[in-house]
Image 1 (cartoon, rainbow, N blue to C red):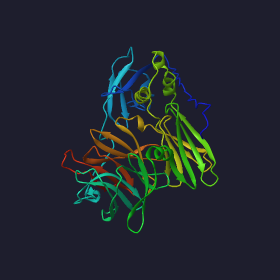
Image 2 (cartoon, rainbow, N blue to C red):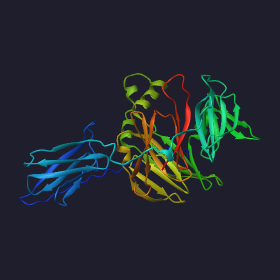
Image 3 (spheres, one colour):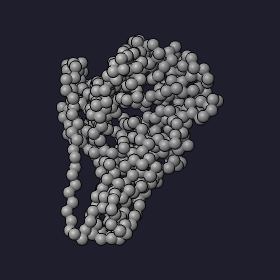
Image 4 (cartoon, one colour):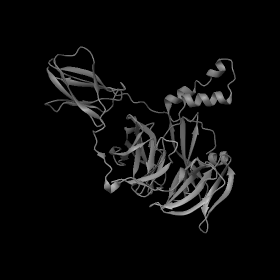
Length: 418
């Protein structure tokens, strides 16, 4: 697992050539469908000749070709996330037809908050400011501070109805962290501790330097059937490798490598600092990586008793068996939609997967169909702009929210998904 990577995963680029044959009385219309706001090309737009069964679909560049027998002719333009549009061609176009379409917020029915899934404030009438929370089993762990006093935080254990079970002042500020073995930790500026409950009080055990803890634990992604799933980045975080490690015999097998080929080509230009005759500092290297090299985002997920990878580089959901052999791969394209955030949530109880969109500060969740890669209905978190953290557990959305006022507290809320 620690040996130097000797080979790259080469991404195969397929070029599709669309051949058209037609009689002298026919002609081909070529065009491009694009977003009217961003001017970005739109993939998978359906273009159909009204009154016939003749149609086609736009490619990744928004381009399409369609055979037309006569003019005038009307074309219907449709896409799951955009408003339908009809255009009429009265004469034979002499060049490409450019078709703007409008994004629709109402194309998919939204789930409205009603009395059955009313938003509930779990920290109502509690005068502390919540900085972080985690859910383990049926318990919610909070890290909170006295109002406007960011010292000596409270560590609080409550149930899912908001009843406080344990609350204790602890000497360490920081953030909560749930590791791949479902243990809870607090990571402070210098030291990390594991949190345990003993005789109705909290204990902080196993101190370790925070940077060392994060280096070790952030690599461990999931655990299933006595096997740990570990990730490792390389080449300026443009290659992501996954390993399966057996806890009992400590063997580790690399079973997946994901690489961003375009980013790798940029990495090859990292000698730009040296070409300027200046030896780069560590700060120069960090600045370059922040500007040019976003880490590959392809999370490995434990969904009930199975393992899958949301491979956004290759636009697939990949499912694996116990021998870590890929058994199926399903196409996805939701990550190419506007307002998508690089965030995926798994409901540990139901096994449902949700993805996050955000527009004008409003967070929207969409359930992912694990068998066809499509998204379900929109679940808005209404009237709550810029929520801080979201966890989904047992068909319930938990989130932190603070009104834009210095006098307001960060609160914990929940509501049920219907």
